[in-house]
Image 1 (cartoon, one colour):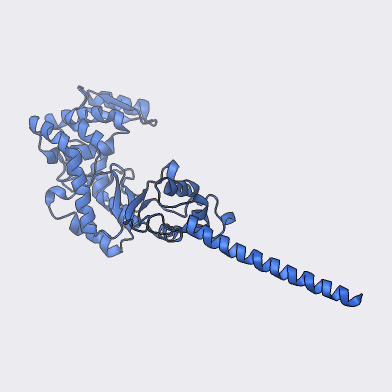
Image 2 (cartoon, rainbow, N blue to C red):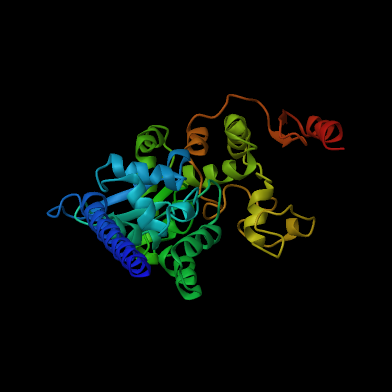
Length: 345
């Protein structure tokens, strides 16, 4: 009886080992099958392509990116890519910062693991947004931070590559959103921004010629309007006032030109001016000199350029903005003083 029990125990143990082995083999086999079905390359003969993520609402979430890869035919299975990306499905949920906006080189000849590895690294092209109305030093700071420039490269962009021609010193580094190769040189980035300016300005160049206005004059005045206006809606009236002063050979007396002279003195490039600033001896000082400054004082957008060419028809010679940003203009200096007392005191 005891021998029979021993034999039964051995039999059950052997059976358990056999079943475990079969299960282990089945798991390994199913894993191999799953790998070839879900993780492997979609098309072994495919060539590398540019895969671009804009960073908008539809492309800011990792789940959405995985689905986008599936929809475009780069991967076979969304879940498989999730496993490849972070190793365990439970760790992969909303990984917003894991894949940065930009352009990546991937291919349908890459496995899910290979694609995941590429997307975990930095994009080979990066999105860079240049807001309207910045001076080139501010633009250089944005570019340096986005493209990982050294201090020397940033200084060269400011002092060398944007200083090759007096007409290109300022004002032609067009504010827009760019997709720039991370390895692009500062010199080529300067050329890229100037090329964008030429592209955007081209439709208005003929109107400038028709009105007998030099293109450099358009950009100088647009750069001031960009800084002086509270928004796009009041740019035409600001333009109308400034044109009126130019036609009557009055000093423009705009604070933004003084801010340009002063630069960044620890309070930012565009901090409010002081009485002392108005005494600065500089051709940019429109409180002392008539006409426009030697160069633009910022890099304007299209609305400011349009305002130069299509100013509001007005008899106003003075303007100010109240604390809410609303513009108030006057034909006379006495009227301007009244507006100051009414809206700013």
